[in-house]
Length: 193
Image (cartoon, rainbow, N blue to C red; front, side):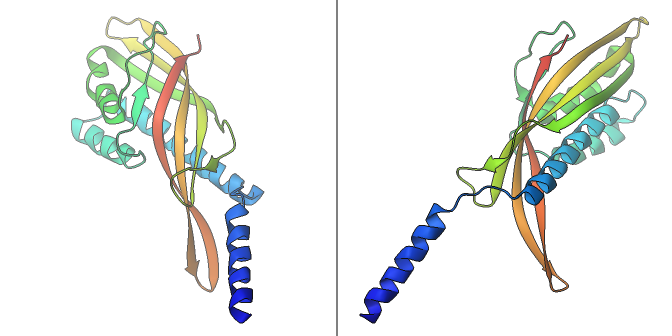
């Protein structure tokens, strides 16, 4: 009889654990949203820095290396041309290298700014990875540049950046702190104007 009761208890416990949903608390959702927005804004800041035509190649190489630590391996980006046409997907590293080394041959000045960086939808549980959530952050990017012939060029692009975030708990000083490790994934850009 004891074995039956123990078996029944284990069965009920496993059914309860298996039936739980993985909905984030409001506090966790808020912390994750802030961490994701911060990471996307850091990427935008890195793009702006890398595009600076006055930086040395060493500074640009270091900035590209730093920017790539925020991305998942193999992440791609789809950009638009100044005419609004979508380009073929390319690795983020390739995009950053082009931004660093090819554009200064065409432009005397480049400025990249952004606005309205926000989480586009609630984060949901990753289907294959425990303690991992996925979502999308959107940002509006403004590209303004002056050609070497002194003509202004610019475009406005809406970027959607896939986010993957892993929740970890750190125990220190007799307290447990929850922390998000956020990585950026593929980036999709589409012309706004």
